Image 1 (cartoon, helix red, strand yellow):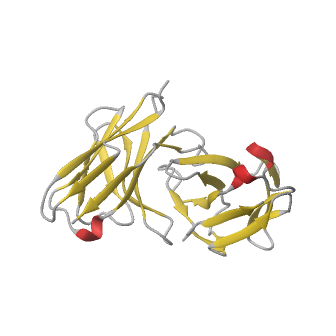
Image 2 (image 1 turned 30 degrees about the vertical axis):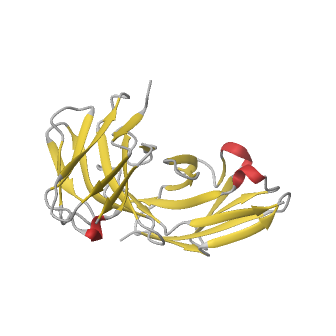
Length: 115
Length: 115
């Protein structure tokens, strides 16, 4: 049971380049989330998904797109990277029962540097 | 709307001393509250959570937190700090929507433990 895994662990991009971050979970969780972490700002929600084939915007969605074609995978895309997107990105997942008290399980993170 | 405030971005204690990390929340509905810990270069790990079953919540690694509705607080404590407790700690409140499991995070508090 690997939990939540993220690929890649680290990436350097040039401004304007595109890339996709992959998140995978093997816990059969319905809900998945993408966050970014910046110093002094905690974690901010980018996009989330409440089930296969569904996605929704979070707090800071601009410049990002997501897809959830399979229940176990949640992809985060940057179409045209900007230096402001330099950050550490975390994926998380949780069950849907319990009306919000369920624990979110986090991946190890992806460090992205945009030059 | 829900929000979380963590008082003090950095807290320094001596090994063996009491650890107190402060968290205040605002919520228009009965809250679910969480404390997560992040060790260097790792993802977030759940320490404990309040789900209305008991106001004093015990978590892993000797940590506990008390929910005080009158003070809208959920402070994290540990009687005796250990060097291995050095990490960043995040308080979070579940978003008002009950069918998405979204969390709102505080800015984080870095705990330094001095020998």
